[in-house]
Image 1 (tube, rainbow, N blue to C red):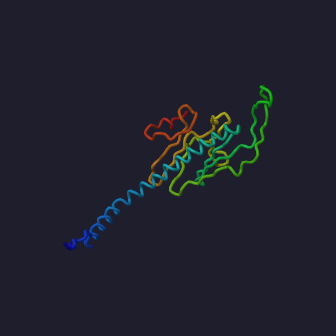
Image 2 (cartoon, rainbow, N blue to C red):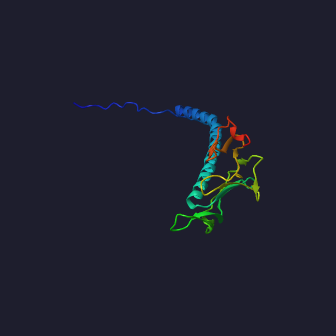
Image 3 (cartoon, rainbow, N blue to C red):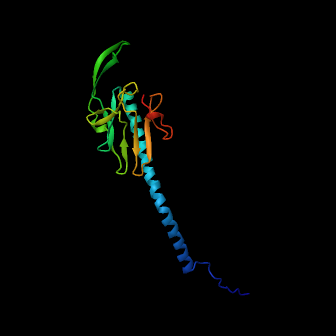
Length: 192
C-alpha cells in the first residue's frame, strides 16, 4: 500500500497580519515611551539619594574604623560632594602597653588617593537648610571617631529633580544616623 502525502497548508502569518501586529506594537510603544522616560528619571533621583546616604554611612564607618574625624562636604555650586579625612586630631588615646589614657595629637598620613568625590547628574540639584553653616563655601557633616556627628553638621539635604520631585535625607530623631525621610511627615524641618 502506497501512502500518498497530502500537502497540508503550513500554518503561517500573512503579510497583512504582520503589518497589523507591527502597527499595534508601534501604537503601544508610542503611548508607553513618555511614561518610561519619567520612570527612568525618577530612578536617577532615587539612585542618587541612595548613593548620597551610602557616602554618609561610609564616612561614619571610616571615622570609627580609623579613629580619626572624617568630613563629608557638599558643594551646592559645583553640585558635588565627597569625603575628606582630617589630618590632625587632638584627643585622648590609650598609651601602648598600659590601660591609662593620655592626651595626644595624632598625625594621619595622606589619604588623597582614597577621598571619593561624586558629581550630581545634570538634572538633579541639592538644597540645604538656610541655617546650614558653611566652611570655605562647603556644607559639612563631621563624623567623630566615636561614630557621632559634630553639632555643626547640617541637619538635612533635599535632592530634587527637574520635575520638583524631592527626596529628603535627614539626621534621624535619635541623632545617631542619617536616613531617607518621609516627605509627608516633616518633623525633620523643625528647628532643633
